[in-house]
Image (cartoon, helix red, strand yellow):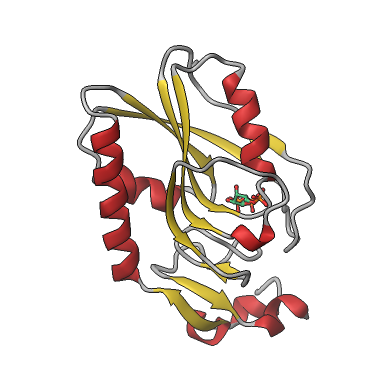
Length: 189
Ligand code: PRP
């Protein structure tokens, strides 16, 4: 039994526009991986993926990196089932391993208000990594409430409700291979 109306709709019916096609994501991910591999040449890199949204980008990005890579996961939530960030970040899952002395790169799917990354960066800096940088596939500058220095950005996007390639609405649509704009009637109803 579907839990709600949008579960009964196919993805094509739910997406108003493809904002970033699969091939464009693939090309940009490859460019970012080359840039990151150059920046960390002869060093080990510890990737921290912010679940759940960041996982699709992480697996594509890490396979293109040419430096030795380890990976750990953290889960946070600022949205819950809502479409607007609450501004209060909760840690749902902490890292498995210490990061002291390691070159850490946080991998995110999207930076919106900036609250999640602001909070995470402050927490992780207290754990004494050798370095801490941020890589995000998507960035929504218009929505920023907290200033965050971002080291690697895939795409700056307009203030639209996007899903796919890890991003969800009500936990659906993460599996879309592209970034699409959700039809407004789905989240306004
Ligand atoms: C999303 C996204 C970022 C955060 C960005 O996560 O993956 O972590 O919101 O928003 P902000 O810049 O306004 O803080 P969400 O809390 O929706 O969890 P999810 O990745 O599991 O969907």
